[in-house]
Image (tube, rainbow, N blue to C red; front, side, top):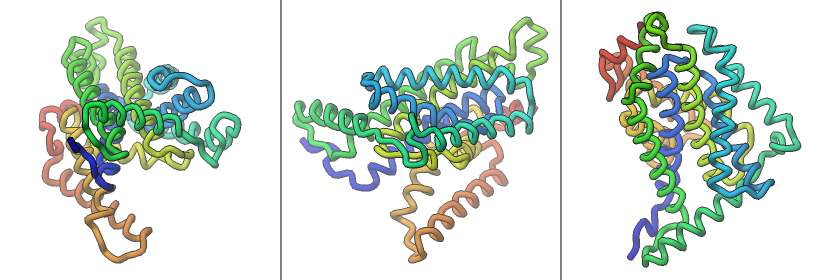
Length: 315
């Protein structure tokens, strides 16, 4: 039986969309539910990519163990960053977290021992092992797949798992207190809850999802360097959650498909202007910017959000 036997370039596009969906869900936990304006989310994306790759490629750790270790390192880093920064508010918090992301990226550029500096690092074991094992398993079931299909399938299975886990967590008492912290942390403190601890936990959970997305990015790229972890990655995540609507998890997944899959990556194939590559890339981002402007103007709560949620986040 042939299943995804020939997926072509759209398989790669769908994989990238899934990676950004996980990344944006981490931001949604932090910003949409915790009220933490983290402009340095790409730092945890970088930690996940480098930590898991180094542990697997250089230290022989298993793929699953390396991935979980990368997520754990990102969570610890998030808590460390949260200690001095989460007491700040608004612009100060945003600037501080943005600076953290840039500091970490520059460390990766200049640390030639672990990260190989600006030359980048390889993640061949990830790609080869994952593709080989998944294709072998499917072939045993008489299912033929394209070489890009295993990573695509794995990415979207993880997207669904992350979305479900996040959605369920945010509906527990912990999630309800976190939302109350976002709306009025003074009232939460008056009730005896530690608002700072809840924000730090939201920061850590969002960092774990960003690290998982970073690991998938490493698997997908095979070879990557610090240039792939610039602030534009965080801003792309913000575009997704703003367009989807603050607080919506499943809407974030759909918006990642629309923006990252259709408009940014997908437009490489359906937008044929005849312009040079650099100019056409700029045009794609102009289209995304225009789409975001229209959404903010005519549906400020986002395509999948609610006005009540937006009003609560603004308080």
